[in-house]
Length: 345
Image (cartoon, rainbow, N blue to C red; front, side, top):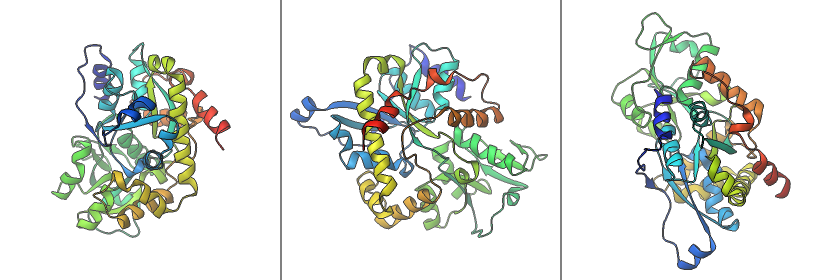
């Protein structure tokens, strides 16, 4: 259960999470003196977070006096664990993780300060090409949906219900059997080996599956679910209180990346991201960027609005994963985003 994992992550006895860095750690002595180092734990390493990588490649963080190191936590629970334990100063994950921690009465809870994406970034993958896919095509089928309590699963189930489908796990009475027993990172491999009739995947996994002939993208969950604050940056309340200037500069860099992506071509964005995805060809990266641009996945500014958070909590309630709604003002701080928007032209 995701809430229980988050509760464990909030414990003072939590051990340090072992993670693998995604960015270079080769730094000169001069750089160490001049730049404030910030370790960012990202929930997964994905082209979905294009504005972040663009901001790094284009030097927007360095311009703000920050050196960013990225670690791939591989899950919102582990991302939050890294944040609470101090392994990372900033976490990039869904705001639902901060809601779980707040509701667990952790005094040093996580506060969201900059939104990065505004839609679900996953796609429904079929075994065959389906040019005229309809959600009714999922009736009587099994789909690999992700981890229980995670936003990818909750958003998928929300879309299925909005399209009139009933859902159950391991049941013959519902329209769709949504499986939650396969780890998110293992879903593409499990699907390729024959498990499930459909699965969900983010990019660039979806494109890789199409190239390998193991699956075909037939629908965008994010396009069909509407806007929600899918991914945001957060830090602990204590760290934010002690490092307001640093958080402001970090938010400034994020906003610069968002604004750059707003006007850049798909090829320009792909080239800027390529150092972080050197296992993908430029053509594949361009294709992936096109796909995310087509569903309007990225926020153009870092302001996480209250109505947007309410939309997320509606999805969580529908999934029966939210016992009580935390106050917006407690888990979201708009000061840094507002200042960035006002002061950066």
